Length: 251
Ligand code: PTJ
Image (tube, rainbow, N blue to C red; front, top):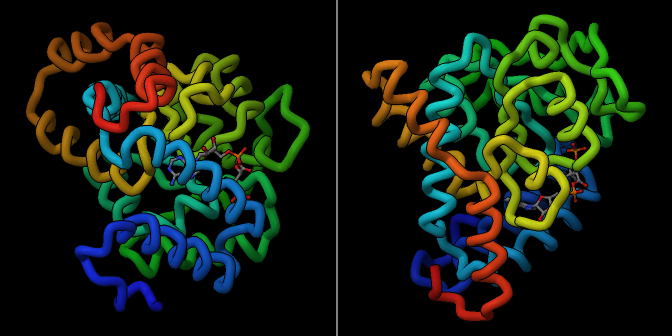
């Protein structure tokens, strides 16, 4: 069944659409084959969270929006899974908070970087960073250390969807504010993030954009209060509680 043929009322509609997008991403050279495995892991957590946005995740999305609006130089990092799943939504988020989009890959090949940049441009992006890779994140020896000097290296706030723990720690050590989208509240990246958004990227990115639009006219004091009131540990604990309770409808 192609994505367009999945009926809206199919009980597993969102999960099937997601799988198609990831499969297509692999076919088009955007998503790595490991991305299929990562997606499977994410689906399991999404199932245990009831495939919905928890109130705590919505609070995190609002704090993420406030951080991005307060930032001097926000950057949205894009990997192969994020590009395949939410290209239009990532472009809309970057526009809403005036952020750069930068391709940054764990399994980096120049072909994939180019294909993802092209794909984002096809979905409305005007400028995509990550191709120059003329700076390195210290204390990180894999391909994710390769960043643009005028992109992630210069950013004060970075949104990193579906992150691996090593780079999350490296960014945190540089003093950058890090917003992570990850369905696993126990993952190292979620645990070191200033703002862990424990939600499916399909829901999280539009939610952050909606909050950013809602807060577009808010003054710095209001935004700072939202950021200061946010409690990362409580957010992670709330998600873990739902998973461990086995009650798909609890908060
Ligand atoms: O495109 P690349 O080369 O940069 O590679 C990207 C992947 C995702 C393959 C790479 O970063 C990787 O292997 O990541 P991990 O270590 O498998 O971690 C991915 C995390 O994202 C896991 O904790 C999953 O639970 C989570 N995840 C998977 N799908 C989603 C998700 N979180 C939110 N929304 C999803 N749809």
